[in-house]
Length: 83
Ligand SMILES: [Zn+2]
Image 1 (cartoon, rainbow, N blue to C red):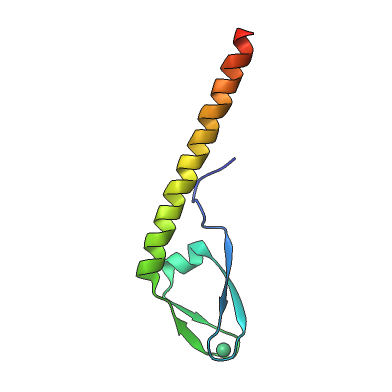
Image 2 (tube, protein in one colour):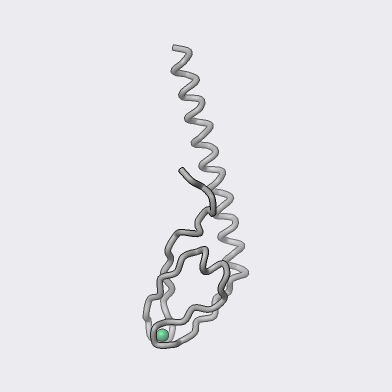
């Protein structure tokens, strides 16, 4: 399981407030861009500062969760050895 890059490859949908068109972008793309343009050319400004803060928290939680699973698995494996 590769945790490299965290959520960078997760697709999110951004709905254009002007016409309702949905643009699909990866979180990695959204980290580097501040505006999304729909197919009709409407530009949506993204508040990426708040977004990135949330994302970094989510990534931290995700990594911690993954570490917890790792610990659990190691504990289970050790437990099996003892039997
Ligand atoms: Zn639009």
